[in-house]
Length: 301
Image (cartoon, rainbow, N blue to C red):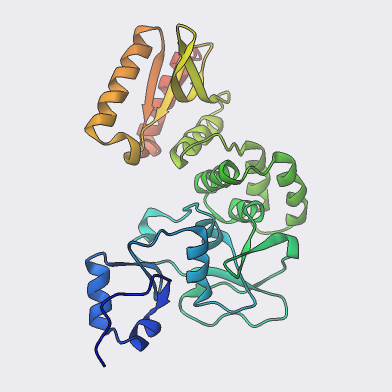
């Protein structure tokens, strides 16, 4: 039988590719030359297929039990929020999937987890797969992840899906005695869907942890009455702007020139502009920009 030339336009496993006539060597080559992408351990999709929420769910369905619910970071990934650490991205992290009480957990290397008490209101069907709702996913991550990562994921889920503070507080009551609930209780009042990147969430949390007042998010500066420059975080009365420069949107020559022009205008008009990057959250680097914020707010001599 002649081997096929085109991979399926739906997610497929290694075994399905072999059954269609592709060799393991051909599959590895397709990954290397970006003809297909690996979505999960042992699950692939053609690179020209748009990876929607439904496609992610169908990919997960290939390797989990019918009684499983995708939870935690996997659920966030299905919902379009990446909560994985940078160091994990060289490989496909295992699916975080839990079965409902009374069912056997999935015993596959692609999956991790056990059983979890979940109500029908805690999960939804996406592409025929049970996935914890964005609200439930946000609170689960608030318990499990490192604080800055947890807040970033919770902010992003609220930004996309619009659940409210009241909804979070109601669900929080069910987390009594759960591991991580103390952190979760601290984070729920801080969640703000106006944050447009994880870096902005980290910056806001660092300001809070250092005892500084909460800044305004996405503050517009008007030029002749027209909203012209939007600031990531700002103390508008003191004219202090804090900008988080992520690599995705601030590394190109065009973006750097655009940032230079807008920041020059702001400084010329009495604003103090403090720029934070991902390298500014450790040791002396963090102390330095926090000290700059304190000075700009008149909190130190």
